[in-house]
Image (cartoon, rainbow, N blue to C red; front, side, top):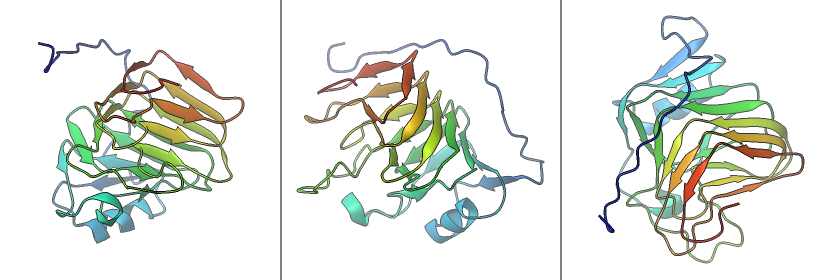
Length: 193
């Protein structure tokens, strides 16, 4: 039990669940290669829906891993339903008004820490630079090699996020000015917030 704890969470009912039949939703399939995934994430639709299943791209680790820093653009919403398991990370660097949410998992399991990087580059969800108004809600962050969430912008809300990691330097989250962290569970191996 000490090595393999069981965590049970009760989530509130989801809101803003996109319909995959909507013309404003792009579905990212588990069989999509990384070029297709990046093209879909950069498409004009508002919602990006990762279908349930395992999303993994290639065998490289660290910054060379193809699923590292998947783009989150301004005015876009990344939805991970329960059952979606994304091995990688999302980056909304220098973008505003974005959302990463759902009941799915973003995992860094099996991926290497990035060594002597000058900043914390590998997080489940990452924002560096300018920008504001971000929401990360409901997701599970598993085993990120660095922080669980690194969101250095203003007016960020992190709500109902569950985070578990056993790396020696994994913090829970960093947020910018005028931000909130609500209703979260962090089982990390360094600072929580």
